[in-house]
Image (cartoon, rainbow, N blue to C red; front, side, top):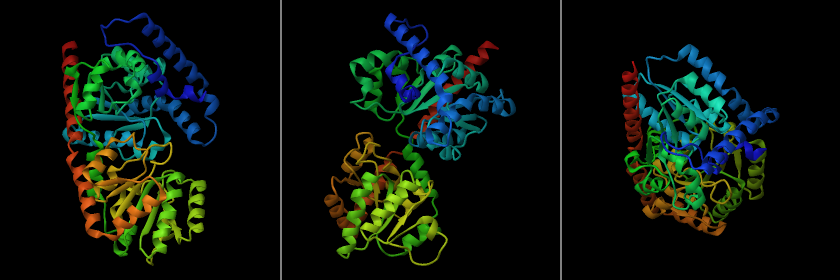
Length: 467
């Protein structure tokens, strides 16, 4: 049942209807029907898994209630005289891209209404920071649910971010003449979608997109292999660069724990979005530095600060004799800080990077995938991370630019930490390269807003012809 709940996996496994006017081949028609039936069957089983307060149960409850929430908001707040853009970003990473484009569109077109949906429960707190009129979960991708969502919101454009396209949503949107677009779109050379099977199955789906705003020229060309005509492809870049730059500029470096860390004098290693696999290498490396007399204050920010994770990290710190305290225990005080601050809540990592002398980004030693290296780089902090970063092109690009280094073991991590914490000139040069890399990537949000404005204008002209 768990596999059936992964709507995106189903979407990637099966094709759906191609662009209006394009013909079906029999196999594609059969597979589309299988997807539609499978999605409906999976949705019928969701109530069995929505009990409790776990992440899965909370997500299912949110998805099942989504259409009703949309309809209630629309009845009270939807102004049919104003255009509406529905933006979907499945999780927090894609949410950063979406938020930057939404902010740029808001600046130009304050009259436009915005609906923002997400898939993962972890994106719920983040969604409150998006400048949207309504935020909530994406409904289950069945024809009935998506038809209800579209009829409630009456959007003029539906925008997806990065990779995620939902078959029944796009099919129902096409039936209503609503254009769909993929923003900050990425398609790596080794993506499964580019295999022979992937191209065969997904080509019709991508042909239905009105526009693809690709991250790079290479991505744009590869979307051509999936059937997106050249006239519908453009390069907009990655809107996360705009988002992290704006966040870095807005942080108050003279307040709270950030000010105390910056004023303490010792180099500060901010380790963000870590998993136990990261901490198993990071904590011994920091402990070894301390034993050799090299000062280095650690700010450890687990990706999921659950009680079990925090207790495990605290136990590891104790074994290696690293004095530590939780953020909640020290942030309201004025005294000296411990050698390690263990962050026990979400939502503060972006601020804490402002205090980083060196940053470590987690996910590169486990199965989760490397988390964002752009956030610390925007503050001018050189970045370290583990070897598994195939999911993050910016990691390799930052290494090439001289602003980041890959670590492969506790030994190499300790050596690199000692090099960067002990040589201020070397560290500053690497940090400046990291900052310049982020700065060079700015502008994607404005180009994404250009795409949405063009589609809104075309949609408005189309509506005018029908009146």
